[in-house]
Length: 122
Length: 418
Image 1 (cartoon, rainbow over the protein chains, first blue to last red):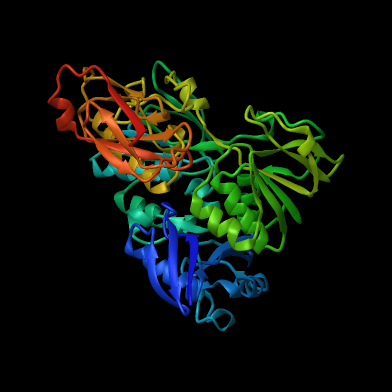
Image 2: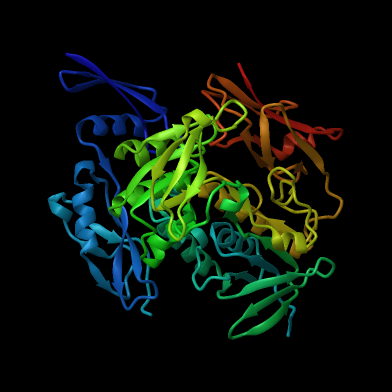
């Protein structure tokens, strides 16, 4: 069975409109992309959609009460809320270093949650 | 205290200012100082914790704090001096003396050889759009809410409506959802989105948040706390259509209705401000109408991408350093740039032919077909699949092209369907 999916590429600010043709669930073609990143995004989006998760964690004794965090790599889209809840439970003591791993293998996704800035103690 | 040994003084340590510091030092300026009113460096990017920054500069998508971390490190390595918690409260237009306030240092008068303005921009507030109704708590600009959530750890509310579709509003829609709030919808008075298409996709579509074009908020309800808003479709003249009015319950209204370059200091310094961009009129060296004062980034024209802001900062910093060293003559050419019929705004407004340059512009309305961005005379032409107000376009002009035409009177930039 041949089906078609259309969506916007989020790999860069260009936002190309992608059309993916699938045959029996397999990607047959990608159209509308202007670079190879678009093609690989299209393939991942139909098979295993992923997004970088970015939020904050509470900080103990920091110069700010919260510190920004991100998933080091894109996490499965369907797991984002589960990851958000895991992150919401954390409280990390300052000082925090950029890149510091706060959760290993978040919610079994194999994706690490890391701090995305340095934060000194208060 | 009069401090006389500063070569280049930069006002604001956001992306433009930090890059300007690096640019000035790399050009050879000895003493380069960046002033910042906040306790921290990095400006607004410190609250932009989502990824999407620096793809062009670093070949990877960084969050705002990560992007600034790299530039701040470079600036420290380049020997840029930063003074935080320092507010500039006056620039004297005749002497170019800069008066600053800092809790430890007190009031100081700095006498730099050149200045770079990198104050960035502010959000258009509620007062700019005159919505009838009450003025309860719960109404914020999207950036204020972003600061509350991402830096101060407060949630502004539980059920939000977003007015305007600028990128910060779209980003905050997703952010509110991730923090457990509801977002009822995003309302945009224009017929096209204000922000990037990918932000519609990844911030609204991903979470099923409705996006309403040609619709606006016509009334605010609630006494102490916001209780809801009335929304309505607008007609071709942007007048609300009464019969389409609908009440939407919400406790939070976020405004993403545009950005304004922040130029109080520029005006004080006697720098000419452009009527349309709202920023200083600059030439391709990013020099303002005051030859000792340069400007870069969102204080000049609001960019889509921080990569462009950093690039412009580097250029302004380097040219300020050249000016401080007496390397920019007072008699350079000043060829005006003009916008064609489909161009709403552009920068720089003058070309000197002293350096290669990029002119950034926005179209007045979307051109949803193949078109061409070009200059007259034809220094540059590039085909585009479309042109949209939310996505800047650019033309590149080489110094040699301008030098080859000693009688050149003007350069027109335009975008036309093909």
